Length: 318
Image (tube, rainbow, N blue to C red):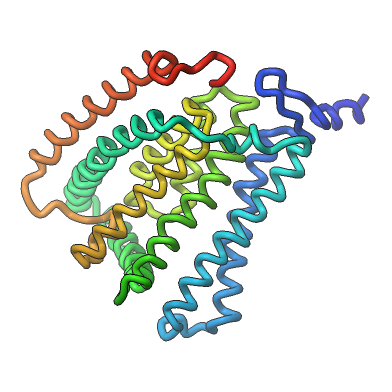
């Protein structure tokens, strides 16, 4: 009897998604999240020390870029694909949602991203303003924020070195490194393997939220955590509605690409920072936040209500 319970999830078939799996999908998702996180962070750190030693500040920047790209591909993407194949041995295509969306779907979700990005930026300004006010009242919070600011500046400094480019070729390589590679590697892990695994046992929006929560935590950005979770949730929502991971890859690429282009144009480290402080009155940011929040929620409501009609989707396709 005990053996039967232990083998309860072996070679099971999900009738709703027509997917076979060899272990509990939720367990598989958490193993991937924790295991690949440790592999990527620890393995990446070991490789960095082995190649550059402890004097990373003087390391060749192009070599650092290649190592960063290689780390994403070898320590994040490759383990995800191997583990996905082990958990879903028959066919990983429906798990990763490897199908092309319609052009119209891509356009609609890009419109949503265009509304969402300034919404999140205005939220960050309000959040950081409120944190500054609270820090004046609570000394412990002020000390914590000073520590977070130092960590944030260290991350900014690292990314600034990676992003600085002196030629068109170098700029193109930076775009590929910062926008293309993460859009593929991170989306296959989070919105592909992890989110779909959760969906096999949980409700869709619960699965999207759990996935986006880990997506935010993965990025080690305390100030930007809420914004990252929100962005991840939108990516997950787009994948769920379109049933295509290509959509979230495009959205992820555009988000990172716009950040890189803004850095190239303005050349400021603040572009990379989520702890940017509002230098003026907070009221305009608050009013902009309310306006954009209403616009975004209205957009999502319209999309939810009319999705099947807009994109000629059959119930079996969603």
